Image 1: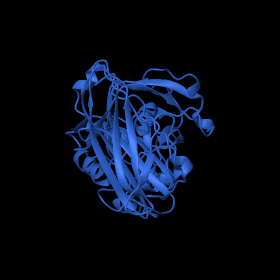
Image 2 (image 1 turned 90 degrees about the vertical axis):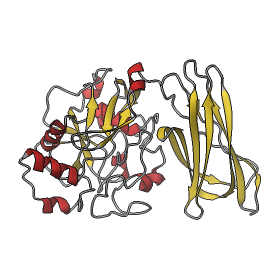
Image 3 (image 1 turned 120 degrees about the vertical axis):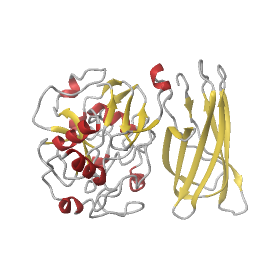
Length: 373
């Protein structure tokens, strides 16, 4: 897929009341830029939800025609007005989410309300990526992996002046596959049993914070995670790959779901409880929250994930543009993603932490990738 661009701009025009005086009908114009090389069928899925209203969903088909710009209207009727309405818009190709934005807004009972969404161009991938399956099952460990398209992004923090995440710099990455979920207790146990790896931690200790086979593996050092990855025929992600994949196609946002911190409980297990986050003293089973735009789960919270790179606070100042792999040496390895005990500042996409690669903590886990590096 290449050269396909869909933007959502100037959304939510209220056009009247329905049977209830506090219900409104919403019309959303979907504006699509022309494609020079691609045509095909997509779907636009719009979901509106709130604590007092449930979820209302409307999906419309969109046909892309070479050389033609189009506007497709989505109409959703009988939406209750009120505060904290969560609006999620997804662009789907089959069952694959290729673009997603979420925003929380207040819907007023008036003639019009406008909010803006904008998606980055998608489908601008290398020719080789178009022939690859978007989801695969890795034979060795049975894990589902998703294709992360080649592309460029602005890596680092330009919103909150995080000292470890500056300067913002452009990074270009090749296509790679990433595990949909963090490696689970059951999968790591199978690795130990099959390989005879000397793990050195009791499973009772692991169960204190991950009390089941479908929970993320904890108490793993960088060395343990690397051993698993090598056994499976994969590797740990570079820090750049991790951040690019965690962004899920979003541009310049704080979190994997967007900029709205109030939505965190729908996407992450972190300090405290609320919403979908029901786990206060342990991790959550993998996949308990909504996926990001690339179909990856738990990229914020649950366990902080080991990356391949050595940590260097100054690395961003001289990082290569293409496929950076981190410093040649160091004392600590990079960890990304926040934990089940973290506050929301550690859930931010650009947040960086680091740990001694030989140490094991109840907060550390990992997932693997496969691709050029």
